[in-house]
Image 1 (cartoon, rainbow, N blue to C red):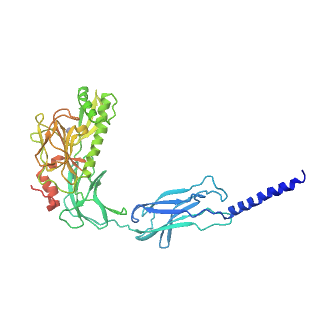
Image 2 (image 1 turned 90 degrees about the vertical axis):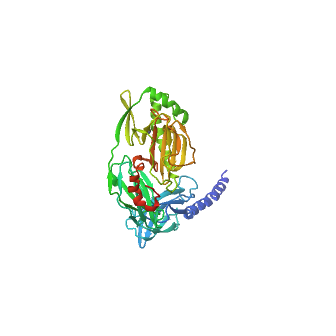
Image 3 (image 1 turned 180 degrees about the vertical axis):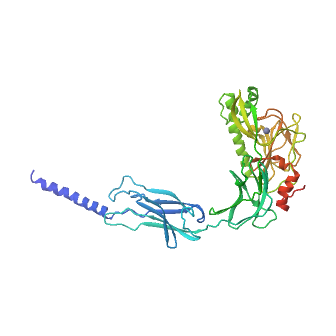
Length: 460
Ligand SMILES: [Zn+2]
């Protein structure tokens, strides 16, 4: 027995010593590999604020330190610095951060000293060190142009007088660097178009002061370049307040029993609670909003052309039951249960009266349409549409070209209608606007024709 002991020891040493040497070797020299770095700017240059996506990959020992810098001339600005714990040199498994995806915002807002010219984005990723080796970090660079001046923007037209809920036009000129321009009014965006017959940079926009906007100074002309520099101009000379009128609608069981089931049958996606009032409120709220979204979407496909050249016409012998822009409070058993804005004209004559197109255009919707029941929508170009709701019958088809005064259907009480009438709306980019202006040849002449000139083929 005593003889075999040294042999054991020898065998153990035979294993332990090389293992220790391997361990020492690994610990001393096994550095992490150079990380893979990708820099992807989301815009073609640096402007006001350019988000830059950066990914760093090191799946072996994991990330150890990452720094993002912006270098311009001699100036180095650190925008982001992150530290990580990589695996130890001898660890082949265990926790580590193999990849980082980050977005760094670079622009005048984050780097105050940024100047026009060129700037370099530099990403430095440390390599996980070993005991005896501390390798150079991996790095990647991307040089981009810095542009801080927004496009030039000059308002050309004069006398911009707009009313709450009303429409207007503006003619303007933008600089070469503009890639998007138009009028911003609160949440609403009215895109600009090339002015027909104008110069390269001559543009115009039809816009509206939304019916629920009270401060006309919120309306701005805007031009943006490809790196987000934005020029804005105030151009409203006079904004006239036209406060929403208010009205109470008393909901009765008999009314709801008549209107709710047919609308539900036409809209199988609607949630039905079985409670009549609740189901009515879903239609009056959710379905109304979904219809509004559809109208906004339809307007986006409107072509850049004036399809009309005369004033819009009002329903023949239509008595005005309700005018544009009324805030309605709905009550049930004396309790206020809902509030919605009525944004069209309700016009009534005899039952099943013939309804005519208000102007030349193309039918973009002809069928059952939510709260409007049987409905026709005509696109008049440049995002301007007219809507005819609650019809008993429809005489046109989608895609059909119609002329002013051509029959589109007959009045009725389909959808959310209390009796036989026409619900008539004019929409600009999906926003209901006051039709009275579009019915008025003098308004069209003074507000639109005088600004747009030959671009608008209007016969007074
Ligand atoms: Zn109506």
